[in-house]
Image 1 (cartoon, rainbow, N blue to C red):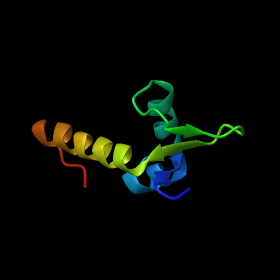
Image 2: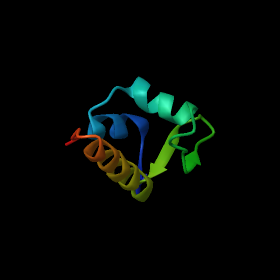
Image 3: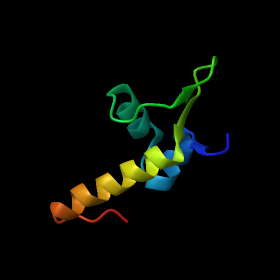
Image 4: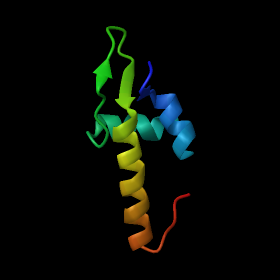
Length: 67
């Protein structure tokens, strides 16, 4: 789906496991923008880019870098 990322795409982009992204979803840290009838989740590119930027800011303020 153009303009959206799936959980595997997010995991690959952020270099984390699928389980981590599912955990963020289940905890409400990442909320899908679209969910198909087959329960496939899609997250807007803008939401994911903002999330990555917030993670980088949080880690840099703690002296940790996420590249």
